[in-house]
Length: 201
Image 1 (spheres, rainbow, N blue to C red):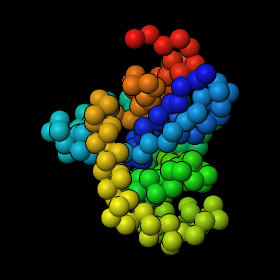
Image 2: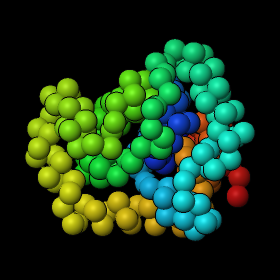
Image 3: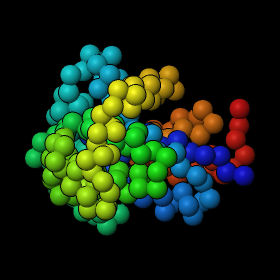
């Protein structure tokens, strides 16, 4: 029986976009259930003394990443527009994801936010953009955003970020299966293989 795969993603993460748009189809084909886990990279980066994305702090790395995104989006047939602002604040989107984690619309919402940011260059840091994405899904945007901004849900996102740190997560996307950590979009097949095959101690 396949072990569940925890999918840890951050809305500002470029490579998470690639995994978000493919993971449900690939995991379903492998018979692996997916647990969607939004978290924040800001506290993790701050612990390293970074006040910005490493792709901005290290220009050569950033140039490579943007070209790599162009290649990979073409390969996966995903729309891609380099965001006019990077990184964008994904706090509200992460809170909405936490609020809806157990609901059927969660994955569609997550994909909608990533598509808006990296496919359409829409400013998903703004509440109006998040409301529009929820509205496009036929959901009660005002009610969901109000629920996402409640203290209990804010605490849930903090706890989830703390859990990511405890698991040793240092970047996104990350995949965890039975405590085993796999980092990066290119490690998604390995995480699924670990979930379905005999796991070594």
